[in-house]
Image 1 (cartoon, helix red, strand yellow):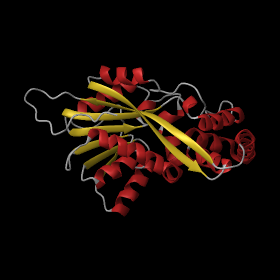
Image 2: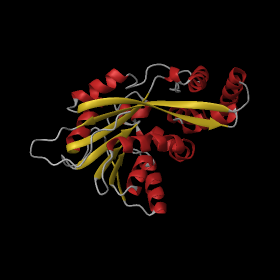
Image 3: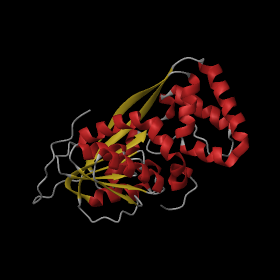
Image 4: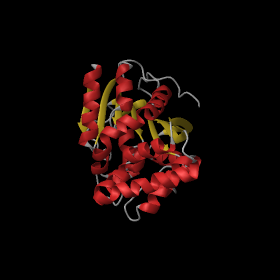
Amino acid sequence: MSSTASPLAAPEAWNLVAPEYVRELLPVFEHFAKDALTRVAAPSGAQVLDVAAGPGTLALLAARQGLRVTAIDFAPKMLAALRERATSAGLDIDAQVGDGMALELSEQTFDAAFSLFGLMFFPDRPRGFRELYRVLRPGGRAVVSSWRPMEHSPAMNLVYQRFAEQLPGQGAPRGGVMPLSDPDTCQQEMGAAGFDDVRVHQVSVPAHYPSTAAMVDAMMRAAAPVALARRALGAQWPDIEKTVVDKVTQDLGPGAQVVQFNAYLTVGIRQPTPDSNTRHPSTPKG
């Protein structure tokens, strides 16, 4: 993908966290992926595209439903995790390293297209939306997910604030405005790419941790910007990690914690042409 100042728009950060990403976040992302697939309701045998597929959470679920899946990601280690999981499950998925802003795929190829927490970080989001539209067949639907503002998840917001205090200039996650974190923006950007009947759905998934320390550890290991900071700081990292855990424990206490992962799922349709045959039911309302 194009160069950018954001560490999340380059494959390096995602390669670093690929194994932990699967281990720590799989249950959360499976919930979002199931919701996205339900809203599209593609029939068995339909061709679907997963852009910024990561370790294949949605791609594997789609393949298990009898869908023919093409998965694109720019991080080779994420795709390696996807291929390993697909092989273990006996699933056939066409996994390709590629650029979601310049898909090397033919026009009007897919019955449905997805980008879960990927397109939101593209340096050129309009191009990403237009590419999804271009490769969809008339009548096909796309689902793009993005995070709601972190203020809606107080525990997560607090952890990232404490990281930011200890990692000035290192690009640690922090609160504030994230891309596509406003429903009007989600609707506007998808609509501008040509999609019709664009609807934005709020989805929330709780993640449970046995202790504050376990929560901080999980978030630290699965967060791509933190992984970059950890590598850059080297021997300094253990002291920083301990400080963050201590401060968050002082804030929240040492006991069990629940973190809410709050997202928008934006769904749009490429309208059928008068002579096209669409196989999809109307978008479920949520």
